Image (cartoon, rainbow, N blue to C red; front, side, top):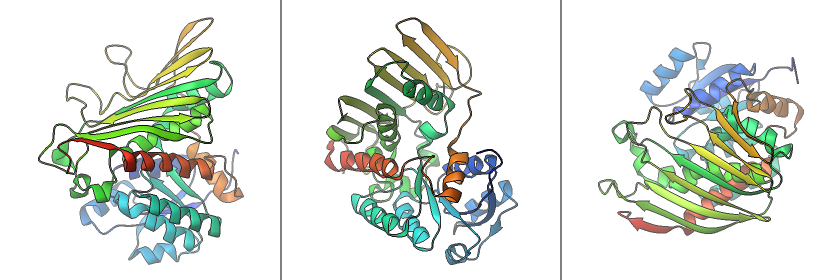
Length: 341
């Protein structure tokens, strides 16, 4: 895939700072950012400052009707991402959404229908796997058989709340989708990817508002159990990272196989090694630490290749949809605890 042709892309919707990661991963891979559009002057000013090469479009339609643009990316308000992606595909372009890519099962069903009808790509940047080097290295190790058959994954997604900095939609379930729909989509993606399972069911799910009664629609805790083809997964996500931690969340993944296990400390090794991207491997011969800070992140490069060649090297389309489906099903069936309204 070296020296592959480039693509032209545009951005619509800047409501979550993840848009900068989405933009940068494409720029690193050689894509050309040409236009962007948003309605919030403050967000427009920030994005324009960081990406002066991009022209501010007069409307969404200007981007959708520009036949020279191959891909549209978005980190709009979560409830608006799927309807935008559907419009993008109907205009003959491919689409990359921040997670969550959907806030309801109905949105997912319609996106599946339009994707099949148009043949376009609907990709979701599950950044806790696609944009962390330790996760990429773990995939290489798992798929090479180092720890045998994967039988269980443990995914922990704690986040620092910073509620005073959050926009209004962060506190409205209709707009953010719920904590399992939102954060746990990362862990559902990783469960499917590391186990290789194609069929799974949610066994248990619960959400809670334990500590924020002043925000009755905010879910500050959630967990779920998922069961696949001879494998299981446990997911816990929350908004309880204390201010004393040196990063926004101690995200961890443990991948247990029949011949060993891998633990990822993606963002911090508390009271241990400095920096990020830590991987620990234990098998029948050794216990090993692997520094993953120099591992390549292939998602952007592979997505560009897929756009040009109509392949699925970055992420199979059904995987993209199915990870979201599991998170949405868990959200829908979850027992509700605490101060939730």
